[in-house]
Length: 525
Image 1: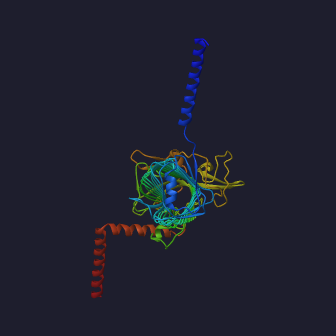
Image 2: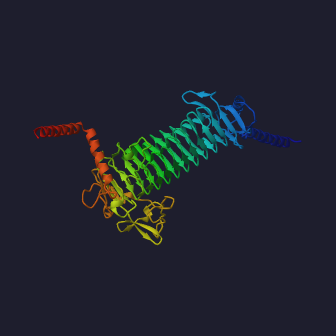
Image 3: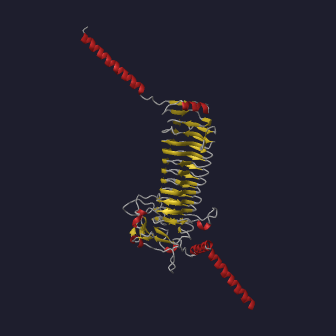
């Protein structure tokens, strides 16, 4: 064999060796496929934690047993924690995170991307699930009951979601979201919690969609010091408050059913800015919407607000119950006034719209108040508003602003071309409270440069009442016998006396003079 042949063979062997080395290296450097680690029935908490600690990123921890007791597990890597048989997890207090508390499952800052699904967690600890300083946590299809504090607590969490869980019977909140962003809660049942169904604080970009939030001792939804929160297509029912907002920015409440709450359907407190309340059915609450905030550019448009009930069974003065929309003692307007337009506000036992006696004239845009007769619309005499009127047709009811048809702006209507309502003869829509139209409120309501409100020409054409009118033509607060106007006047007088000691002294002095005069008259007679 000549040297040339030998050289070719050596070159070929070198190439084959190099290929073998490359194949070996690539095979060993490729990531190991995720494993499934089965948790056998009867394992104790220590054994399960040991298996979790020995697992790899992306592994699945599959619980096979029907029930595990005294559980408190720390998840410190990306794992899929699952049960396909609704395994019961009964938590204990063996692990305590300083500053947080005890738990059934705790997701640490190294557990990003983890999923927990399919469990029935009975919480004898502070929390059912805690996630802290972590991203991309998914909590799906669990029943989480109890918790001395909250069922689920998310602190400094982002890009995470909770879907189709039942969060019930906690000693605090069903879901507590704190210092978090980009979190969504969808299609959950949240009920019978001692505090709120969902509590959001110091958070942003939160989505609350299609949840049933019922029978919670405080609010269905509480939002504190947060921004960019979307509350859409939920049921908020039989809570103390339906939705409670305090120091918020850009909260969008749309398409919700808010009814039978024991105080207010929606409360605006402290400072609320750019709040949008639209296309909601707000019915049978003690008050529909209660505005007790420094309100900056808030809007209440295209809602049905009806059947608020007067009650002596709350801490609120009975006079301040039964209102569709009411102002609280702390209401202040900004240069960007609140806009209240194109709502159906009917059947409320006290006032459809009521001002605060401490406040002067409250300006409201055009709404349907259940009657074409301004004497029957039950609006407080300290409210200046415009009326939308109706005209029955063969296909339902048409709503008018002056001579202009405004069906597409009213609750329960689609943006159709025929302009016909699907409502019934009393003006209440039997639709779902939603509209596909986008209301340009600036067309009908504007603000002058000095911050005072003014109705534009188009809205001025439909002015039907002036709330503080003293003319013989009647005023906005009349309900047929003038009783509510008298109530407002008396309360305004009482508040003025209470807040001005000089007025009280003057009244006592006047009474003293009258008494002296009467005494002298009696003596000389």
